[in-house]
Image 1 (spheres, rainbow, N blue to C red):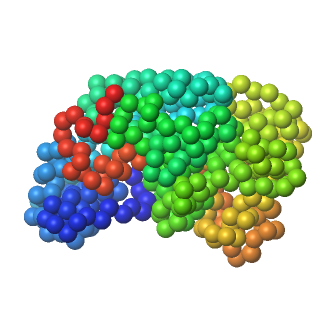
Image 2: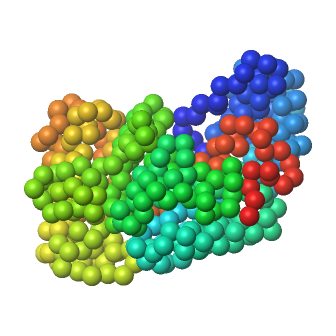
Length: 401
């Protein structure tokens, strides 16, 4: 797992310093391993004896594993190569989409070890029903992970809506029809549960898994359009946790009414339903494949709809670029699959509306629609790397089902 990281500040006590050093060792092996003890010591600036003691503790608690002697190519006795364990804690990520539910288990090495999905239209369904089905998927994935010697360290859920900062409450998810839904009241995972906006988790996946530089805007789309802003490797959340609502930036103030109550919002021109309407198409499930196929075939209505969506995206993003001066813009979610047809008009608007030297690089996510789900799972893994003492061997006290 790559990307900028900041182990949490620890109190200046012996216990706090040891916790911080354990985290440094784990992060170093995660980012650069497999590594010998000597190599870890060289990277973090501690003595070999101190690192050896930390490593022994991490091996005992099931967070690191010794792969055996490595051939270093240098004179002297070869050291043992250390790697993150493939049987210790794992992260459970889950996602509530407008037209699907999903859950996945990821081990410390970043490998997907279990997955469960359900294609279902969640628009207008009772939140309790949707979340009961999601909990069943989470428990199925957790059971598979346990059978492989893993222990869930927590559950993170991605949702397509506004999440009040430091809570489990979805304040508003217009495309689901949700208002003031407390996921903690429906999902039985106690303090092990975290909830975040899907665009935020997609951005974290780009940061951690794809190594995108730490100043960028991540834009993703499903029925709605969300964005996340990353500044110096950290999410910009805003006072209430609502930063990044790009889909409700008005691009034509007198345009059609949006479910949010406004008019002319970006979603009304570049969201999936708006694209289908403009192209004269209907589709069940995720429609980006149909739109891409029709555009590839030369369908003039599909191409025209995608060009118009790219223009609307460019108008909305120009304001973001002028305000924040990001290094890059990353297109994720279903936008990634449609990028060949969106980018020309999007780039044209950005070039017209931003300073010549200030136009950021436009990139397309390789994670696509997987980003929020993987970001959710990896957010749990990061909590283990940041505080190894909270995830010692045995059944995790942070997860119950």
